[in-house]
Every structure is written in structure tokens, then in C-alpha cells.
Amino acid sequence: MRRAIFPGSFDPLTNGHLDIIKRSLPLFDEIIIAVLNNVDKHPMFSVRERCSMLKAILPEISNSKCCLTIESFSGLTADFAREREATAIVRGIRAVSDYEYELRMALMNRRLEPAIETVFLMAAEEYSYVSSNLMKQVFELGGRVEGLVPQFVEEKMREKLSKK
Ligand code: PNS
Image (cartoon, rainbow, N blue to C red; front, side, top):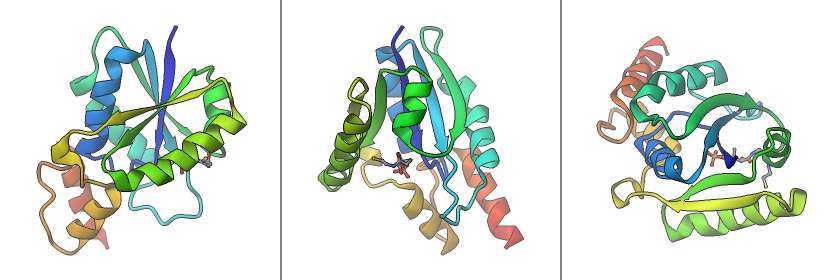
């Protein structure tokens, strides 16, 4: 049984995240999309909203060979991965600029849990500049994020903005 976790903030989910999830499907029997409950940040969406957006999109990306589930977690990613008996942590790399941060996290996670490997997948070129933070910033300033986040997520972002 090859079980992996794909941890992140997913605030909000982008097409870059979906690209990485799709690429990881053939590699594992089970992937847990692990939504970090980060108390010290000011998220656009609550953890519950982020999880339900991911759940809504699951039927579009699932395949019959890999079981995809969504969970939220608090604390260390390495602890969550061990508790779920995962053997891998999936992370996406977009550009060289991601490498240093990701390397530090991977090495720290390895130190915390030597049996768990971090698996890096390269994002598609068209999403190489897409990050949740950039999407929020552009959207809040009236820019278009069409094609960079799922349409459903864009609608939820619009709803959020209208309530501000
Ligand atoms: O999508 P993000 O925000 O880049 O994801 C970052 C995430 C959630 C993977 C990272 O912040 C994380 O693992 N946080 C949990 C706390 C933790 O384990 N910190 C030490 C990492 S070495």
C-alpha cells in the first residue's frame, strides 16, 4: 500500500495544486490531501471552506486506481504523515525559487521522520507562477484569475470579496 500525503494551505485551491494532484495519482494507491489548520495566518477561507472546495472538485480529478481523501490537520506535517502511516509527502516545485524553501522543509521532515520521503513533482509550465497568495492578491485588486483557479473557486472568491 503506497500512501502519501499532499500537505498545504490551499487558501485557495489553484489549478497548480490540481496539476500536482493529478500527476501524483499514478504514483500512489492512496493520497490524503492534508489541509493545514494554520492558526496564526489570516486566511481568505476557513479550513472547513477549503476542505469543502477540495471535496467538490474531487470527482473531476479522481481515478479508480488511487483513493483520494481530504483531511485537515494541525501541528507538524511529519507527525500527521506518521499518524496516517504515509510513506511519502508530495510537494510541487514550480520554479528554482521554490527549491530552497522546499529543500529545508524536506530535510527537516526527514530529520523528524526518517522513514518518510518527500517526493517533488514539477508543476506544468503554465502554472509555474501560480500561487494561492498571488491569486488572492490579484483577485482582491480586481485582476482576472480565470484559468488559474477552478471556476468554482473563483466564484467562492467573488462571494468572499462581496461580503467584505
Ligand atoms: O501550501 P503551503 O502553504 O506552501 O504549505 C506549507 C506546509 C503546510 C506544507 C508547511 O507550512 C507545513 O508543513 N506546516 C506544518 C508545520 C510543520 O510541519 N512545519 C515544519 C515543516 S519542516
